[in-house]
Length: 252
Length: 252
Image 1 (cartoon, chains in turn purple, red):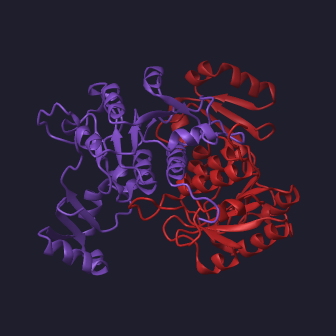
Image 2 (tube, each protein chain N blue to C red):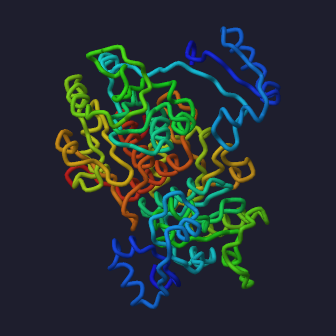
Image 3 (cartoon, each protein chain N blue to C red):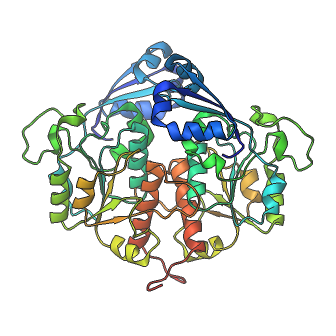
């Protein structure tokens, strides 16, 4: 988060608890202000704020920055609306060693407070592109970032084409696919550079996007559940990728 | 859910949308009542109710019922406080083919509305034991079920002993473990009957419980995230079990 934080608001108890952190922020040139618990409750927009609130600059990057870095594991969110889900996917993507997360059109704003909190810091670990924001447009008109109008256009097809041109195979997570994650063929597929495409919590991926993917893979269901929660499905898919990329054989 | 539902409240629009379901419930002897949208909002305790609300009997079972059925994959929740997390773990356990979920002491009530909703029906697919409720006590004093005082006692050590006596190996999910899920030794372990022990969202498992487990296993972290969200970690662990139990080899 170096250079990203501009202001830090802190309650007196939190300042006592996290004295080292607050001092380090002040040393780094961050404007630190001690505020009341009431003011913190207002600012933090959460029921039990932790007493520390940082104001940060936007950090999303253009898609071209992501593809230029030769990523091997990328997450593409299509129409993911729940900020908690999106943040949890970000955290799982980070844990599984993904190189970037792209918030596709009609997905939640990555700067939504619930998304930021659910990401548990991972928003600051991975390059994030938000296709609805100015920064994501490779054509590059300097719009302000962090747009809150995710409905403004369908740019996922373009992003899919760019990722494919960068050598990634686009794999849609789709419960209806005949190819399941536990199939050796899926494992082979996932050993290669992959962009996972995840769809909406309730209705998954529309046919138009499924048609643009190179393959689709389902998380196998062994019990009576109809499906998995989006974030848990994404975590299982991303760890299948991690496992295929980092094989460990007995005795190794 | 056969025989579990006693009453069904439905709004007029939902009755029109789900006419078949409502008729089937009435045929099965369920008392159906059409109510206003306002009454539904009050009853459903959620911002956007779906227009259908069923009143159900308690369904948790004594732990002895679970061990008697010779389970091969069981989930034990220790001190899991967030109802959304607990319900999501239930759903993932169902999807991964688990045989039962046990809500250990100090865990959330499985009948919490958010837990029920997050389970997406899986609460009714798998046997569930709630260690703080009367039904879970194998000693069997007939207390009323669905207790809302999870703090009342520490019964997890007893449950761990009972599961072990039933032939399950108790494996703690612990980020600090030197044995990671991708290790062939972990895979071998998980091919055997397993009770996964998952701890609190923030602080994991206390040393006393870790000491009671037969082994502990960590989800490997390939990136910069410090940990995973509890429900995503549980899903990755449970699918590692499923994969170890249902191996598919190339060409099979």
